[in-house]
Each structure stands twice: as C-alpha cells, then as structure tokens.
Length: 437
Image (cartoon, rainbow, N blue to C red; front, side, top):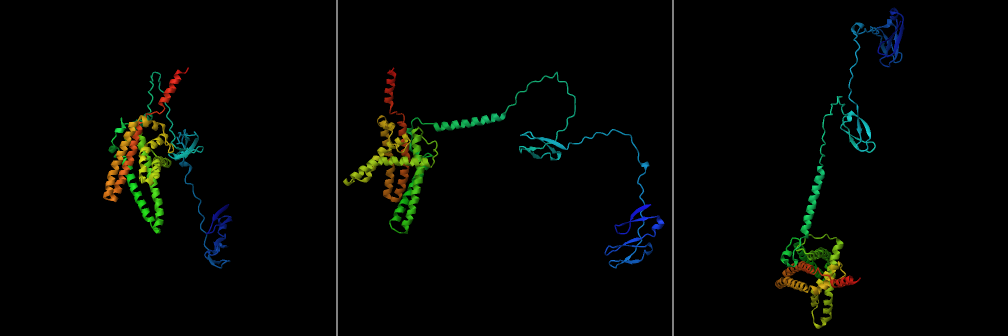
C-alpha cells in the first residue's frame, strides 16, 4: 500500500512504504526556521533539539500531525430519485443582435441590442443611423374573409406646405407691387409744386442742412489757412497739412451733395413732386456727378469771364463775367444729363426746346432769378449788420438755393421732355416712303 501525505510546514512530500507499525519508525522532517534547511530526525528524537548543520540553530523536533481520515461521501445512492423523461419546454430567448439598414446607401449592418438608441456611422457613406429596437414577431393569426368588404378610394392628402409657400410668395409680390405703385405716383403738373413744401421734405432737409454746415466749415478752414500762411513760421508749416485736410473735406462734401442734386433734377424731370429714394452711388458714380456739375459751371462761366477779362482795362468789374453763367448753365447741364456724359455740352432736344418751349424757359429764368434774389437779400442785410452773422445766413441761404435750383431745372426738363427735334424730318421721310413704289 502506498500513501501520500504532507507533514510539517514544508512543501516536500515523502513516500512511506509498509504498514502502520513500520511507519512509527519513519524519519520526522524538521525545517530550520532561519535558513530553511530541511533535516530528518528519528521518531525516537521527538521532543529533543537538533542543531542545523548550516546555521547552527537549535531546532525542536515535533511530532508530525496525525493523518487526516478519508472524507465520507455526502450523499448515498438512496437520496437520488429518477423522474420520467419529459420534453423540455422551448425557451424564447431575446435576440442579441438587431439589423440596421443605412438610409442613404442601404448598407445592412448587425449591431448588439444593448446599443439601441445610439447612432451608428455607415462604413460606406458615413451617414449616422439611429439604432432601433428589433421588431417583435407578430402572433400568427388567421386572415378574415374580406370578399364582401367594399373599399372606397380615399382622397389624396393635401400638401399644406406648398400652400403656405404660395401664400408667402403672393404676399411678397403684393408688397412689391404696392411699393412700385407708390414710387411711380406722379403729379399731374409738377411745375405747380410749392418750393417751400419741397425744401422741407424729410429727404431734402438733410441735404441742404449738410451743405450749409459743410460750407461754413470749409469757409472757416480757408480763413484759417490764409491767416497761417501770412507769416512764414511754424504756423505756415501747419497750414500745409490743414490745406490737405480742407481739400479732402471739401471733396467729400461735394461727393455727397453732387449726386443728390442730379437725383433731384432726374426725379423731377420724370414727374415726381417728391424724391422716392436716393439712388445708390459708388465712388466712381460720385466722381462722375462732381465732374458733370463742375464742367457745366466751368463751360457756362468761361465766355463771360473771358469777356470781363478783356474789358477789365475799361473799368468793368470782373464779377460781371459771372452773369452769363445763369443763362448758359441750365442749357449745358441739361444737355450733359440728356447725353449722360460730362463732356458733351450740346443736345439737339434741349436746343430745339429753346424755340418750341420758349415760355417754359422764360418761366425758369424768372423763377431762378427770383429765388436768387430772395436768398441773397437776407444774407446781404445780415452781412451789413454783422459779418459773422451774415456769413452764417449766406451759407444757409446759398444751400437752399443750391437745392431748389436743380428742382426748378427738373421741372423745366419735364415740360420740354416730349420734344423730338427730328419730327419734321421723319415726317418728310415717311411721306416719301409712302409715295415711292
């Protein structure tokens, strides 16, 4: 008989052969507590001390623990009862995977049920798709007999979104038509429009106020430059920079006023008694407006100033050369606007109106001269009382005159706008064409 058991605190195992009588004389293993050396003692040395051959430590020989009894089985064959074999009930297991089909490229993907509610990116197109719970299997049932059931076609569902878009577009179109009608409203006779009502309009009031204030500022800057340049000193150097600033300010003021003045003449010539809107002007358009007004004034003043310069030795004042400007300026400016060019001061339509609409021209000159006299009289009176007050009044009166003059010029253009200078020539040609075979 061979038995295997473990003794002492060590991990080595000993094989003991023989019966129980022989096992009492077997060696007893002893392990050194200091260096771990294992030595063997006789059974007769139990209770005595041995010396470790390595570290010389005294060790007590203890009796080995008793051999544990074999464990008994917990159950015997009598505790088991056999039952008859029955068919196991089928268990419905919940699905562990669900199927997701991409909404864009229809790629099929299988994902775990625990990811339901999250989004899965398609590996082909990258579209995020919502993972939905797998659909439960419907219980099988018998289809009813529907042969006697009469089905009627349901009316198609109405698409209210298209109706909303159509109503929105119709409302927008109605607003645009109403705005166009308001802009196209024209008076029956624009020459009867009162000048005071025109100058006090909300769109016209800022124009002449800014023109007046800007003129006052420019005037004072010019006086300051003259005072600084009278003496060659540090102030004269500062005058150079002030001159540049004054020129830039005057150019900006002219760039704002010139397009507005031409717009007043243009709208009035079309029959408007008020300005519906200010046209958008970029930098090039503003430069063209300044050039057109500057060229028309220069060409209108050139003959009179040349004649006054030639007659100056006879004692004629030089300012008298500006008088012909009032006569030539409307003809030249209307011609440039008719040709849409600042370098063409002649128009056949404007020229023929001098004879066919002479009364309109006479009315314009009478109104413009009267407006000039009304504007200059209070300015001259205030100048006599106090030069500073006269300068302010002169700037505001001049700004009003500068704004009303294009309005009167537009009325003149409206009254002569239906003239065709080639009517007679076209009529002759038409008769000749009728008589020709």
